[in-house]
Length: 172
Image (tube, rainbow, N blue to C red; front, side, top):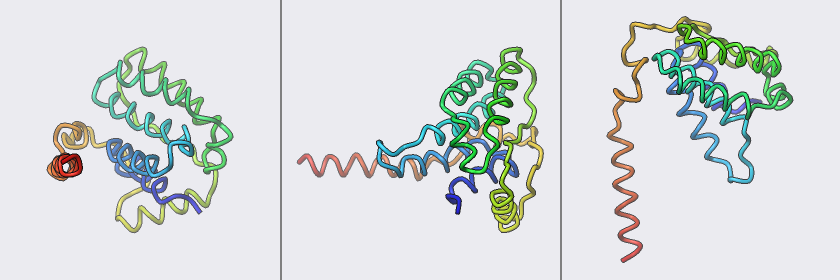
């Protein structure tokens, strides 16, 4: 009923508090659509995760930019169709944007889910992965906090190199 990418995003968001993975899973899903069929909602959800990633790391300007972008992109009705309480989500983002502007310390944020079917799907995925829904961020976990710097990028780099080789071969 819901895209698996959305379920995974929500589990990374609420159980792992791994905002970097939230970005990765939804960006891949968003890019799977033809450009004319890409919804701003997916980008807005990505921006929420990236904004919280920046906020947790103390990058207030990056966090403010992402949260402001999310507020502009998200549409209450579309969010409601996907199981969120769209107005509540926008309201929470407005509050978070103000907290970031005031450089208040990071605190976890939950996305308001209004449909039990979406919540059950997320809880089932948590059970499959053996993680706990609505966990707290582990602020001592350096890998979680600085994942963009510390992750293994060998697969990405190998794929880039393969693409360069394919282009060279095609243009020859």
